[in-house]
Amino acid sequence: MKKILNIIITTVMLGFFGFSIWYIAYQTHSLINFSSYWMIQAIVAIGFIGSMVVIGLSVKSSNRIVSALNVIGGYIITFFAYLFILLVILNLIQLIWNLPLIESGITVLTLALIVTVVSSLMGSSFVVKESNIQITGLKKELSIMHITDVHLGHHRGKEYLVRIVKETNERKPDLVLITGDLVDAETALQPGVLNPLSTFNAPAYFIEGNHEKYVGSDKSLKLIKQQGVRILHNEVIETHDLQIIGLDYMNADEKAFDMHPSDNTNTIKSVLANLSINREIPSILMHHSPVGAKYADEAGIDLMLSGHTHAGQIFPFTLLSELIFPYNRGSHEHGKTKVVVSEGAGTYMLRGRLGSSNQINLLHLVPK
Image (cartoon, rainbow, N blue to C red; front, side):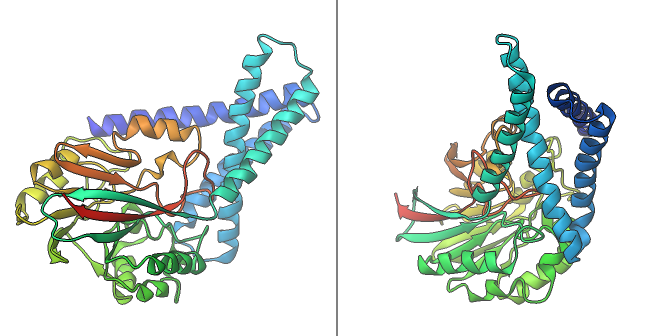
């Protein structure tokens, strides 16, 4: 069933991409008519498909030219995405008002460019979001910096990580918990890029995300570990009167459908059932994706920390993400388990945010 759903979703997405390419070219030509239709169609197709190919192939590359093409490709995709949306809106408006074609076309192109620039600026920095969380049985107040989805690679590198570590150290957390997707391309594994991890003033723990697997788990986790960060592999550790449970990237259970499926034969359901979790001690579960909260609750977990969703990253995908993930961003409760989903410190595929924000999350845990 999961394979059939994957095939259906892939087919629908490819069909939509093909329609988008045709629609953008056709509507742009109809509005402005500054070149032949087939010329515009070729430009749109080459720009869109070429950008997707470069982004897909650049995961294993550390070449600077490839990095530049990756970034440019991200901007092109963002521009086309907003151009498509604005053209649809314009078409709807034209059903009511007879607007001048050339002026409307120029306006739509300009707005798409402006939104692309604005989203790029919003995706280039991050904020520190603070929240208080009550934990039953906690002996004293603790602060945790939750960091996820930094996506070091072609769009951001060592300097961005330096800023994250600096902001973290200034707030003096007791623990730093990193829930995956720290890297998303081979270029992030070059000498020196991950060195700032060694300058955290608090103990740091890490679990892998799906992008560590894409880049290469063995190499990624080895380099992260070399910086003094503790890697957790389906295990429980005790520190600061807490149990920290760190899980590898996996599906919630054997039947669950996931748009980023794991090839891990373990599941959250099976692993939690076999771990020795002391229900008398407050516990925090780290898993990259906010799935499996049901099993966290059954295991008596007090707090589950995740990322992965990016809260959809850019509008209107922010709305789609709300439909896909029951826990998409912010704080939630599943039974007695509190679920906190960060929007992530970075972005994937394109350096853009609109309707969401890059963030690291300072969580103040207080006794209940």
